[in-house]
Amino acid sequence: MKLLIVKTSSMGDVVHALPMASDIRRLCPDAQIDWLVEPAFAALPAMHRDVSQVHRLAWRKWRRQLFKRETWQAMGELVDTLRSAHYDLVIDAQGLLKSAWWARRSRAPVAGYDLHSIREPLASLLYTQRHEVAYSLHAIERCRLLAAAALRVPMPTLPAPDFGLQQVRRYGHTGLPARYAVLIPNASRPEKHWPEAHWQGLGRHLHSQGLTPVVLWGSPAEEAMATRIAQACQGWVPPFLTVQEATGLLAGAQLVVGLDTGFSHVAAALGKPVVGIYCDHEPGLTGITGSAPGASLGGKGQQPAFGEVLAAVERVAQAAGL
Image 1 (cartoon, rainbow, N blue to C red):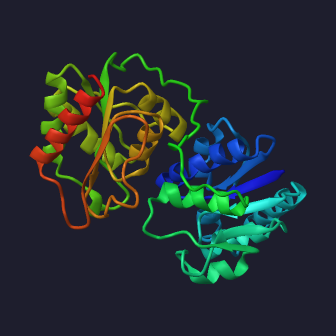
Image 2: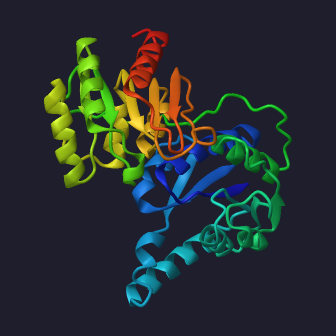
Image 3: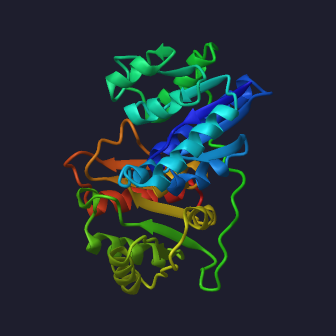
């Protein structure tokens, strides 16, 4: 059987869908599993041991350039690639009109959420199979139950999620400390941010515990903030990192503290102790989930206090044996 998983973005959502591939491999050992994803996040499914091929859907770029010949040529090439693969089944775990439309371009049967379980109800009309999966479940569980339903295999109880990230190359740099904790103080929206002074205080605490704070960044403004935080706590700021390099950096960390953003979920998927800080979203449906001790603090309009985060860091570190 040849299957295609459609989960195109964002980073955290792609991470939450990774256990689908592990489940499919366990349920169908001989299956070939491919993935359709935005290029920015393609490194993640590519590092999954059970994913054979990753197709890149540059829709974020294409939708801004729909009147260019190059855009239509690139879209046509992707359609040809999907159709020539002759998939037996496509599972759209994104649940959007754009993902459903691209899933249908493969000309294979498409499974997805039903009208009452999906983010954009009209997308369900494009599916061959429609499955009910409760909205109240964690995003990881929803993806896994959708895959089981699509394969017609009952899963009354779910084993611990297996993110399958086993093809990760450790990040190496002459400035990288031997023992370090990664801080992730930046996110896509300012509403998610936690006060910079809190990050500095947290960094000083970690340094006092023998862990050098390593502060991630992704833009010039974020680099400036990361530099200020690092200078206040004797930390280290790496150069700009690709998704693959950042994943390798997280793989070597002793502890990670981050906002509700993709790399926090990557760290949890790698089995790292993680404290997630939620300032603009409820953690219940997308909380930190992994094999190591972790904590998710805050919520919509409920910015966690510095003392609360510090206590959680100490608790998680102790549980992890640090």
